[in-house]
Length: 88
Image (cartoon, rainbow, N blue to C red):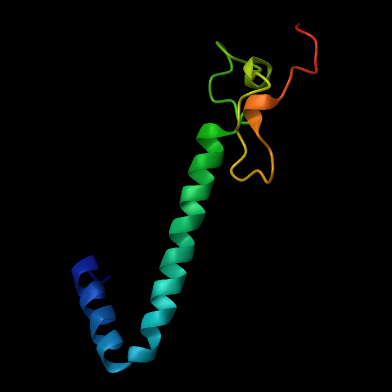
């Protein structure tokens, strides 16, 4: 089994010999990074995901009408929304 340092040297050598592979590494690495960041944001910010079920089993009930939890909302001003549901 090869050591990680040797693998990095081997990859660097291959990239020097085949420079056309550089964009492939850049785009695959960037896509993987964006995927991990999106997954992390969804896990931490989305009210549908509950990490602490004992203290807060239904986190979506604590959201007010002015809370923005979507990543991208088109033409929606959350500060002007009124409450449209009853309190439980």
